Length: 264
Image (cartoon, rainbow, N blue to C red; front, side):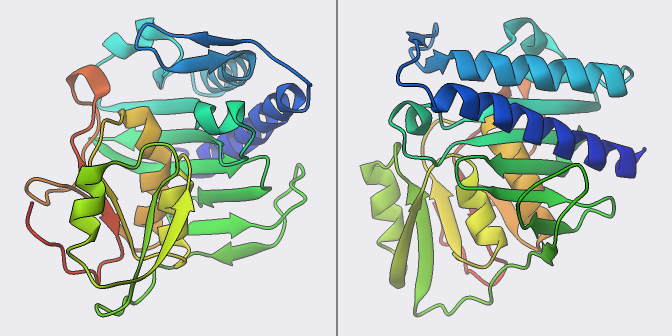
């Protein structure tokens, strides 16, 4: 596998998609439509999707691409494939909260092994390097990478955990589960940034007891795994795997290894 080429390409495509997204975000208004599942989609989603899908197919024609915005791709079954969410956090985008991200991941045998998460409105860029280690790149982000900072999960204090939770999808079940821990502080974030906050050691625990799709989580999980973290199913604490029929995730928990997981 050409990991150096893959990392370089997905980084470049994430930045190009981010520029396209910001070109829409900067306008006074833009159209918002509802998809079949009632979730919102905008011109920015579609522009970013076209850039990423076209770029991946051109650079790696032998690796299939599954992307949220192309329903035909959801029928794919392959041991190795790219998994794309061109604009994760469309609700944050529409509400102009800035917590939206571009997500591209490489899936190998059910595991997201390489990935990039780019938050263009915040200028934060997270990705795995060719060796699978996770980094945050300082901006401005040009053709050549800027200053790189290795990411590493925290060493949690069980008596004072930092928990990150969703801005748009917080629910009572999640709050009830969090209440079983001794929490010192909360962080609120949208989209796949929650994984990146855990990867950067800015939070210890991110539980998600709600519906997500694989493209929502793959790139963030790749970044977290490359920083020494883990993502497990909520029910049995087995690793969260990819390529499932329908690409729907079960409930899950993302955390630093030092967090003692409580039973479902």
